[in-house]
Length: 243
Image (cartoon, rainbow, N blue to C red; front, side, top):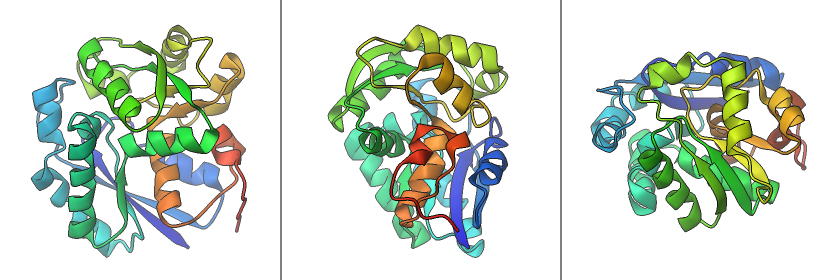
């Protein structure tokens, strides 16, 4: 059994995690602990508060008691908004508090893009343009070129959580760029776990979504690889270790 822990802000698309656990089809347990996000707003000041150390620390003990072997802060905007150095400090603080290997969804995207050999990516963000631009800057600073960025002006996670497959597909299509090796959809409030193969079929390239890469990152931290094609190209890479 591999036990993975996730700190998830508020309640939006957390039901992606039991769905991903099911699609992994292995001896992997995903435990989600909700943190208080404060104000639900895709605005820099609100996101800095959502990702503050005291809000993350509040859920750490529950994850420790769950037997988690690694912990990931399952929030993209609440990590990249701190900048690369600040996001590293955030993860280090989480690792110290949990006594476990730790990461965040922002770093999960950079590691997943590297895993796929995606040198250039297109970003389809629900966020307002200024917040989407911060994610693009984070990726560039961590070594991933950005061919295109599209923001959608969605102000809250609650609104993003209500998007259906058609809206997610439209965002991905509008974000795509001929030079992009992969398309990134960075909001953990978007429901995407059931749509990954359909998105990749429609767009004919890898699609990386927030909750997908968050779980992959936790597996990476534990040294575990699982072949699960229903979770997209990212979960079909070698080496395959399947229970």
